[in-house]
Length: 471
Image (cartoon, rainbow, N blue to C red):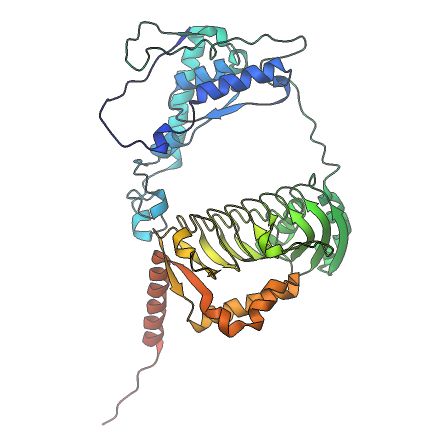
């Protein structure tokens, strides 16, 4: 039997934080998941993974006995690479060089792949030893054997008093034909994927770089449209991709999740309708254009037209959204340019590069952890400073000629691609609207740009020939 016991802990007073006090232990979530899936004859067709402070082979065995086929490691793997849990990952000041872009701090990183390999070998060795004690030859035999767990009643600790593990250790009744682990291989039918059709009908563009244009309907069951097509182009042309607008596809309808994910250079997707979450995820150089149906009567600048987490981890490309986007817009964007007419909470979170032009309101916590890139926001109600997280950024007026030229140029492009009447009114009243824009600039990013500029200036001066002076 494997015994479950309470963890020791100090009783010193400390501030309550969500880091320690939010969510539930993985054991409870895993037990509930296992029981519900087994009772409903669904457990045989999926693999269950759990994670959350898994540190030892004993943790792995307990997770398997409760019902997990796969175990995730994160914190302990980072610790094996040198992480000392300073909890400053978002501040770019990691003292051991794990989570930072500062070249001086990165020199301190001492981690090696062998460190993680050795750690995992120790975990596997301890897991095998416990399995041998319990009489299991394979990991699969151990999955779902909740009967091999019991509570150590001998542990006398104030935290364990009153704890009832009955529901956690409950063995679900297995219906006829059911299973406690994954035994059925799923058939992933990709015949309904739109990318097969796209690849087949853009062969001239892929093979000969000849421009191709298509029009087709789309439904929200069509997910990750364009990703496989982008993979084919990347395999043939690398990250350079095709020339701009070599493949142009106009879609009509509601796009499913991850529309245009990892879209390669040379592909332009135009969508008349709306899009779901993860729109433009990992955008890699392509162009995405979204606007409402021509017969719609609502005002796009006040209505959400794309879902949450747009442009997550984008590295390049352009996006034009005639309407509002949901929460977490451009999280971890590192190179894409986006124009949108309003966003939800947590916009530009952890952004490291690229530029974002927002022609309307933002939600709260804008620019949290933003260490790079630039955002321009139309702050008509003068409340943006109350919604912006100022820990790592400054809010400035737009006075630099390059910033003004950028805003003007991409407003024009936004109008050209989407027909936005709202952006058109901004340009019509340009002299009055320009002072309403504010610039969100990461503090460290500005310093880095200034340092690069001074180095380039010094090197250019050094390269200039000195004049010879003759007596």
